[in-house]
Length: 72
Ligand SMILES: [Zn+2]
Image (cartoon, rainbow, N blue to C red; front, side, top):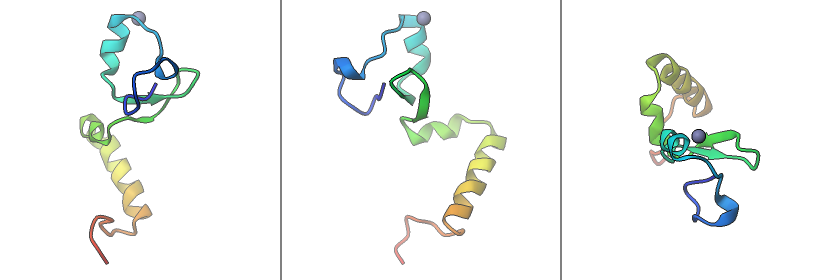
């Protein structure tokens, strides 16, 4: 379910090798097997430019155009 957590019974969604390979630990799932978020934020680099621009606009607005990694 969450590749960032230990591989224990309550954190596993049984699936065949083919299905599991496609995921490559990119997503976090809820208890019903639905994707709820990215497991690794770097995966956004693989999104289409249009989607990355939308994400950028969302984050730009959220952080008021300021880099949240810079100290005030
Ligand atoms: Zn399968």
